[in-house]
Image (cartoon, rainbow, N blue to C red; front, side, top):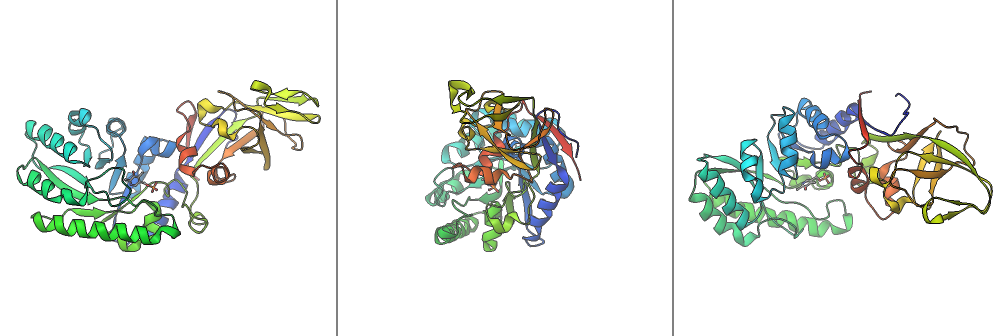
Length: 369
Ligand SMILES: *Cc1c(COP(=O)(O)O)cnc(C)c1O
């Protein structure tokens, strides 16, 4: 791999392929795979990742918002795309770009049917989401009759799939709750499918659900974080590789005398002669101020260097007193070495938050190896 000479996010498509095959190996041959590429494919590069996933044989893609789906269509991606959290204001655009809405409430169902009918759509594919315990988005089980009556009155939409979402699929201590959710989802779909004259697909599992609840794979699984290399457990992490490596470079090295301070608000005070390095990445790039003052660290020449003082908008300063390094040397913020989930675990966060935070200012580099 080339050494970084500026801040870059390297995205390894070979690792994506390996992760995809590993996740696929956990499902049956007939289970379809949906790749979740919302939020710039978890902070990497939505178009590059989506294209690669299509080549790998993914059956479906999902984004959160219509705008994200439009970007994929603009890039020429033709695979079906579910929009997980559409707003009624974007329904014309959604239909125009052949995106498939998640309809999650009586209100949003009525709105969508109105727009689709108005455009004389026939059998426009939609997906119905049921709330089974996350209490975030979704119909309640007692909405089934309402849904059936609305759907029976129109031929403008066709329910392609019915789905739900687990609240704690990575948490062994919540196994009973997850099982209750699966049970409740089975009951809801049974009742709904009885009243429809066709059988939509069912899906429920995110990445950890795939690993922990094979009985809930149904017709399709939805994987996000696993594709990007995080399994939410030590066991699964062994078989997955982080696809993104955030790298930067030492811009300047300083000798800081005992008693001097480093950075804004003089948050760091030196207790001895120190060697510090300044790195061109800051909170505007997605390195939260929470990682300042020793809470976060980077790797320089295979050695751990803590972030000292406050994280600035465009820079961090690190302590490299005991590290053999010079200006221009590469710095690893996270990647295969210095895993993002190690950093977040010690900082009251999760891999999802750190990797999706990397701002669009950071240059993306696509590699395969
Ligand atoms: C984001 C999301 C996923 C992906 O979850 P991971 O834990 O990243 O695999 C799946 N389903 C829904 C509804 C989501 O919003």
